[in-house]
Length: 196
Image (cartoon, rainbow, N blue to C red; front, side, top):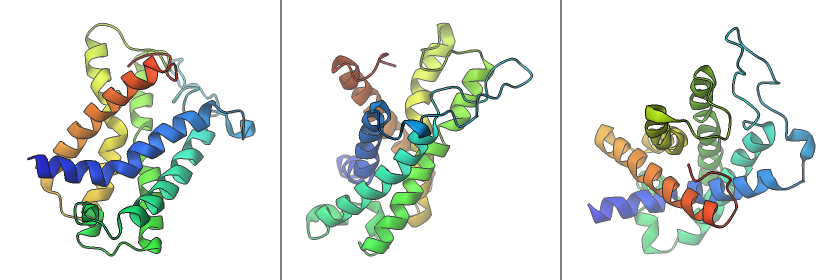
């Protein structure tokens, strides 16, 4: 079990780093022109936005850039170490620059795209962007908010290595718990407004 969790962390290393750096990137004043909502401010018949102000083209671009950059750096850093054999991406594939660039783009896309359905559902439930839900919705969305992007990233892993459903679910749970811990740390470091 510990070996499997270690494999998951080694495999998700670039995802964790890209998520943290993208959060910082989105707070910086650079590329301000891309800090526009992906939904263009459009409202559906229910009177609520499609995704809300927090899903921006700058964030989307950041996931692509940092997903790719950190996957390439990660692959280079672990290439001649024991960690290379723990990474699910390199069990059936060579740790090369080209392969890592492809995986990085896919991880960035998965991270960004799999956050959108969650935002869509939250807008339909009239949950304010960037604010926690209340009541029973809060308990559900604390997990879903942390797991949404991991569902996509774990699918990318599954595409390159046959995880099976149990390991896939394991990835989602480990990723969500890790995300919760990092959110708490970022909150206490004053880099997040809400803990969850």
